[in-house]
Image (cartoon, rainbow, N blue to C red; front, side, top):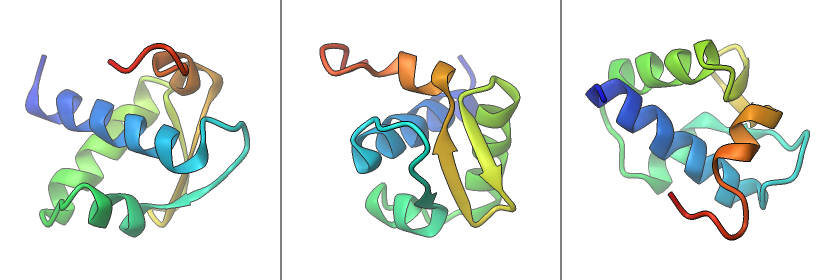
Length: 81
């Protein structure tokens, strides 16, 4: 697994935690990056675009993100991968 994919999964997991895993809830990407103490904006952008390519996140520009059903299914309540 690449560094970008690992980071993409961390971001998806934190969006899941931030939104309570609820469908349709948007999260500000800068809030997620701050929560994860991510300072390299280019690395975050690559990871978010990779998560979108995998179908885990939906983007609104690069400002806000929300989970897709595929992203929500990665981290269900009893699955803390």
